Length: 221
Image (tube, rainbow, N blue to C red; front, side):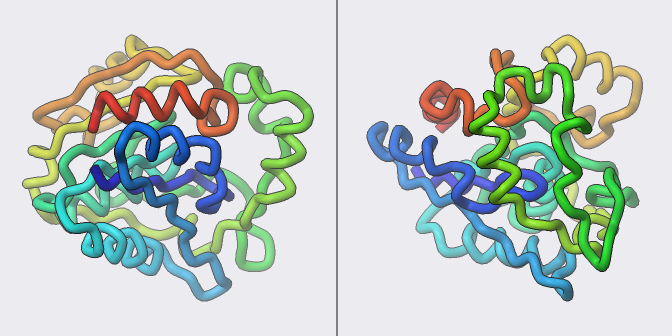
């Protein structure tokens, strides 16, 4: 199956380098996306890059989105509900309609740079050794302001028909269910087919447990 992989904030396609070999061994065609990230890049430009990859696949795809990119994955499902077989959300969930994509950290000179590891102390980064921390920080791609502050707009209710697999690394399925019940995640609440999968890792399992993550994606495919 064609599997498209989108990393979260500051990650390019190389973030999945340790995941894709196992997916290929299991018979899939993975493609890790590096999204445009210049000073003029807007959220719509990144969405267009994802949709181009979806359209280039010979059949429906398994779309995997990590962290803040879970919103980008949901936007892609909204634009191509008939082309995405399943949406996999890893360590994140979609922003609601009318929200902003990722206004989480300070913007400087038109970009949202990686804020440093102090912002992620605790369960998020507990399984990252010093070598991985340095590697991720060194490769971090600053997020364009127009992406981070881009408005989130959905329009096609057929997105709710596409199955969602929620992978829960640094938080538990019970926590996500509580957030949904409390009304914090309307896009998950509206999904007609959703499963929650516990995954024992921090926020970046593509680095800390790549083979295990690949095998889980294989079961979804």
